[in-house]
Amino acid sequence: MRAKAKPEFWTSERCFISELLNDPSYPELSIARCRVEPGVTTQNHSLSVHEVYVIEEGDGLMMLGDKAPFPVGPGDTVAIPAGRPQRIRNTSSTDLIFVCVCTPRFTTDCYAPLAGGDAGDDEPE
Image (cartoon, rainbow, N blue to C red; front, side, top):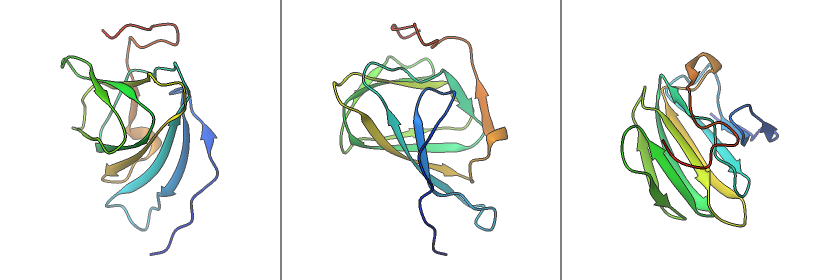
């Protein structure tokens, strides 16, 4: 299968997403490039699918379930089990860019917003 990246779009999660591969004819996985602006923390949420972040540019603070927040940067990979609360904060002065791989394929009904992590919330829970 050959796929072409779709144009970047803004999400209520407070990040920009460009879908690289997300096609019903290939339900095993989806791949997206995500961009979080400096100082922004994404919405606290969980997915009903497994997710992996591969950090390409920038630095961030990953908040994953009840684990202590931990720093991430270029070359880091974060595996996120299905159902685990998560959010990421861009701690750098440039965009935080990462590839997100979901298995199986992400659809909008996979996403569940959670309490905490509001736009003005600068501290991890």
